[in-house]
Length: 364
Image (cartoon, rainbow, N blue to C red; front, top):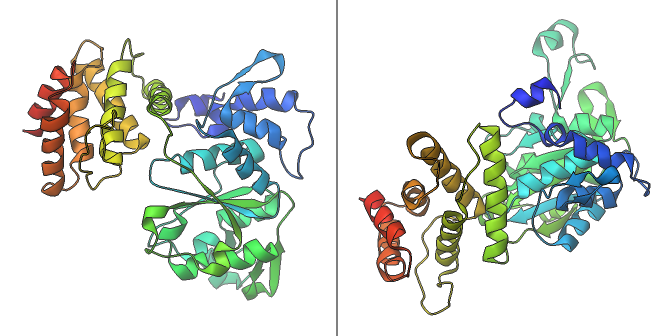
């Protein structure tokens, strides 16, 4: 790993896991699609974990269905673009980054979709000083991430596709169907090099913000990323990510936080699903998402509190403020939901007395 990657607060996937990618490439004898650095089998191993040549351990980057990941990788090996769809916190961005890192060795060819994303972000812009001085030319053209990916035969990423205006979304149609980017100002075009493809992510709760046109949707194979199937799977995801984040921001190793992580995950799952873990009581759901991503944030914040203002051991008081803030997004309706849940479920649960009192105090 380079000194720059070590110094970075959040290294790109290809820098952080360079040793794993190199070990997989060294022992990868399976067929590779044009422009790919690894075979589809090795890409899947990188994402889901396993062992590479020489006994190098490949850490899991995504915890979930193997078949789902295989379908996503197989899609990228064809001429179809990939759309990762799911509720917030289902690791869409995380998976797209690692797929791009494993396939192209570069996860940075990224367009971040927002309501203000302009068409130039998807296609190209201009160096206006040169444009005025010299007129339209290749030298005055400033390629966007998608154009650069087309020229180099790499994977481009578009995040939050449904947040982009519809006319900007539709700029992708010709790129995805013809694998060509017209440049009418120069009377020319850019044809994609073999190996080019595109991964887009979309939050299915945002449907209706800027619904994808049927013409654009047909250019994608859609893979729906589910929420973790079980509490154990979600605890595993949260534990792994908290450990990674803790190392990146210099927090000490968590001596014993498994119990608090499970409690946070249990609370989020029950409120999200509207029923207690044992199925005996129904509870109201708040307005927030309460995904694994929020659980990771709550636990990481709690770990920082324990490290800097406590004895380093994660306790109920360290996560109470974070979990209250995550649940109570609407100060009126969510506050009622949270209070009812604390009184009807948490208060009566054996061994949760410290958690109940900490959350009551945090809620004021």
